[in-house]
Length: 357
Image 1 (cartoon, rainbow, N blue to C red):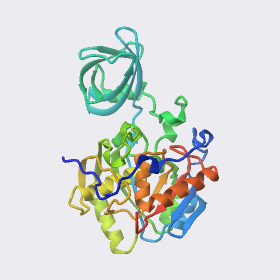
Image 2 (cartoon, rainbow, N blue to C red):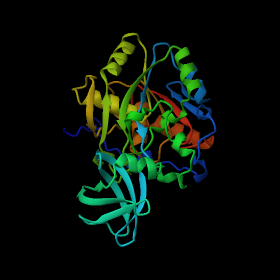
Image 3 (cartoon, one colour):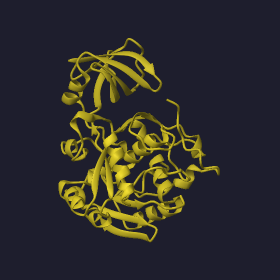
């Protein structure tokens, strides 16, 4: 499958255009007691408004369609040791088959082909088969999913700066995630704000729901290291946009409703399903490396419910493409000034699409 990147932006886009200063105390290291109790910054052509996530039911309109990513997070992090006794940390990126996985691996010295690793006090072994780019291909002595279910830890983002706790196994999952789709190594965090009460209120307001699947990889945390963002190489993620969701979107647009993506992963899935099909949304499954930044030619999305993202991240660039860089950076400055909580367990934004991005 060929690589599809946004090349519509002709003028240079500097990485520093997406930088902002964030006090450390505004990083939300724990979720609030109630999912929908977070604050919500509403960004529209009319300006910026301060609300709560529960107010989303008043911001949607009849016939609007909210599109959720129903992937589920794997307990993908394992700690073990090498034959030499040296410590090793593994983050499963993708399960290849029952006993084999592609993983990120941290150790004082990278294991060579044929090396053996041990987990769970030596009761589970893994053979290093080969390097695949930056990843390691491991063959486990036991089924990978069983190993992770028994011994894996939730792969919390590194910027939380804390150890995993028991409550994370529930709170770092969306309430609508599909247990049959447990393949992500990071949560689609915008969805963490939705509880059953909010979903019911959205339905009562006349909104409809649809689902896509995009399995979030560790590449979502990969920093941009190029001065001109157009030179950045995006990571690859697998997605599925079913025909039922395509039909729901077409029906929504025919009735004048808006397509509201819940999270940047839903955006990437829907826009990829159009971009990989000559600009026309179709049911589609496969790998995407779509990179959305200002001047992107939108195919599907009208609005976005999302968290606050890291400075200079591709996710911040995506949001800037939807509402305009200056407007989004002004909104971030407003959020910092009003002490919003940032990142995975933090507050949220409801961003309406600008005519000019």
